[in-house]
Each structure stands twice: as structure tokens, then as C-alpha cells.
Amino acid sequence: MNKQRAQEISESPVMANVTYQGIQVYIQHVDPERETARIYSLLNKEDEMEVSVDALTEY
Image 1 (cartoon, rainbow, N blue to C red):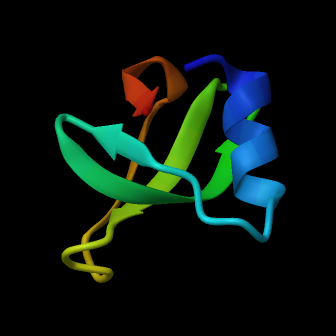
Image 2 (tube, rainbow, N blue to C red; image 1 turned 30 degrees about the vertical axis):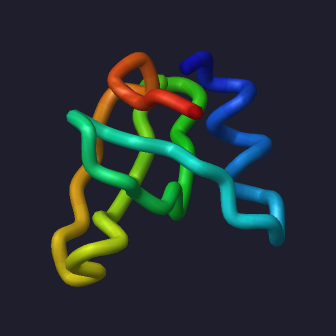
Image 3 (cartoon, one colour; image 1 turned 90 degrees about the horizontal axis):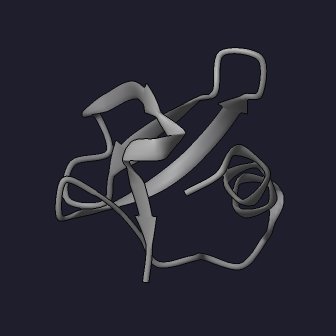
């Protein structure tokens, strides 16, 4: 995924179908300078991490 699309998804009130390593995630915040996203798994909301936006997939 590119950083602009990740930013759009993070700012949208509509839940998008995004995965990280095959697990559905929610994008909390995007850092456009570092091209990273703060995400958490929908299965475990306490499992937050920062990942490269390139590692995210929208389906």
C-alpha cells in the first residue's frame, strides 16, 4: 500500500479491509515522513505496532 492511501484509510470513518501479514488490522495513524503506520490487530486491540506502509495490503 502507498502512504497516501494508508493516510486516507486512517482518516476515514469507514472501516477498510486492511491486512498485515495476513491478519486484519486497523490503521490508527500514518507517519508520512517515515512511511510507517501505527496499527493494531482486530483480533487483539492491545497488540499495537508500527510497520512500514508497504507491508499493508488492502483487499
